[in-house]
Amino acid sequence: MDFNNFSVVKHPLIEHKLTIIRDKNTSKKEFKELVDEVAMLMAYEITKDFPLEEVEIETPMGMTKAKMVSGKKVALVPILRAGLGMVDGFLRLMPSARVGHIGLYRDHETLQPVSYYFKVPPNAEDRDFILIDPMLATGGSAIASADKLKSEGIKNIKFMCLIAAPEGVKAFCEAHPDIHVYAAGLDEKLNEMGYIVPGLGDAGDRLFGTK
Image (cartoon, rainbow, N blue to C red; front, side, top):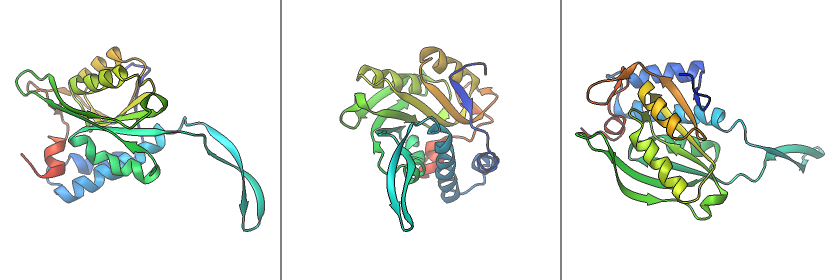
């Protein structure tokens, strides 16, 4: 996909784990653990442009100057419910990040997002937001979520997903060219039901053991 604001995060461990995640025979326990691990690996890429500042510290051997992340206030916003499965992996790297929630579900007939919940940390306009959903399929839910964040005065937003469909990438990147999208994999297409092919099935159902 030729969009400046779309990247596939390439790493052997991510590709290996994503293959097991896709396998229909992977257990719920292993699926959940692997989604968590891939989210943590992706967090390295998503945070690579965070600015650093020089600080002075004392090691057991004496004083030295070193680098620390410069005053970043990060907020993670999973799109309920499947987005919850990727939050803990990110928090392992940035445990001080705040967590908000956006409740959206996709109407299976119209394929349009329906909103039912929204809550973000205070002083939202001063934070860097990372919107999280395992699947970028039609793009409807992600676009609606980004619209809602922007309507609250939030400007610094990134979007993280496991798997994206070309249709969803095109729709989202055109609707929000200022938001960079990070995916672990870009798949072939959507089927007639709006599911990603080859995909991994319904991420929420596989994470939480529902059908």
